[in-house]
Image (cartoon, rainbow, N blue to C red):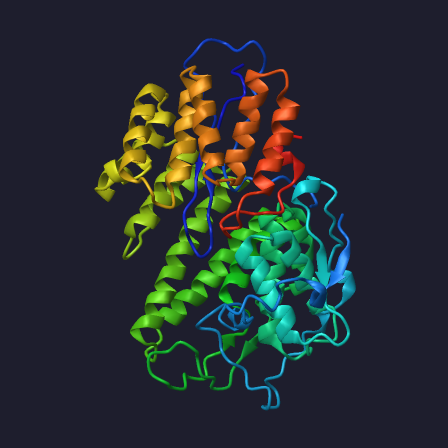
Length: 465
């Protein structure tokens, strides 16, 4: 039996984030004195509920001081979604079933360290909707995902939202589900997603001519049925409902179903070039998600075949990276190496050092991460590169160096999930006073400035407390 090992993860800045974790590999230095603690990547989240007092939104200091928050972002969730004129009889959709209290679970902050807790905010009777949306937008921008999930449900179950305002209701519902998942409450989000029921139902389609926002030229599209649910919510609901109903095949079927719809949209003659490009990108994303769903099912053979046959018209660096990571996750190193070679930029990206790690060449990976860190100094992914470097240093037995790298990242105001978890693991490995060191780490992170790039409502499990 090989000991439980460190794991690495690299994150991409995608509108629909996809994080893929590498498998476990044996360390290159001698056997440890005790089973090695696990580490994880930045988007790995525990299935913990994140208790705080509830305050009205109007009592939140600074709510009106941030003039950049207007709450209008909730109307731009999907640039291709049809705008339903509420004045047209027959086009109104009654979504009151999403406004019931029993749809939403109660949230708590018991599992969040006291230094990182913030008050839950709820609308009050005379609170204007615009003010609530401003605060919600502020929470999202700052990274308070658990608070945003709570406020989203509070708005939906208040009297501020009309049951026929489908655009706002669906945007808030998407925000609720996405924030639950980002804060580590995926199972809870999966249960709540079942309230949407069958998204392929004719109830969710409109057939009358509707104007599409974001079009290059104002025009009325044909009377082809159009889905009223924003695309990000549809994609998210496919996965969450498959978890909620305990049927992984439902997720595969759902991806194929919306994939067929994407193909039909691409073939429409009245689309602008910009709209057709968006649909092609969505179809390419679904192909990657289908492979990922097969991996989650444990069918690695089917995942390998699907990934090998995946054809994308305009791959791009991000898509190539996602394909390479999937091959690494499956264990097909030859295919991953081929994708990396075809991309032509392996020396400038993280793929080559990850491949070296997958092959067990940790000393080479240290050199490659060092070189990549120097080339990407000052860029947004510098912290992730340095963290992967620290993991490789651990594999080569250089524990003190790894600790110094991770602590420098924290001192530079980095605090993403895997960094905190891995540094807590290092403290356990190098000291008998790890509890005090991890508690001190919580205090340090609580004093860091808000950047909006990390989840601020992190549970105790992130710090291994």
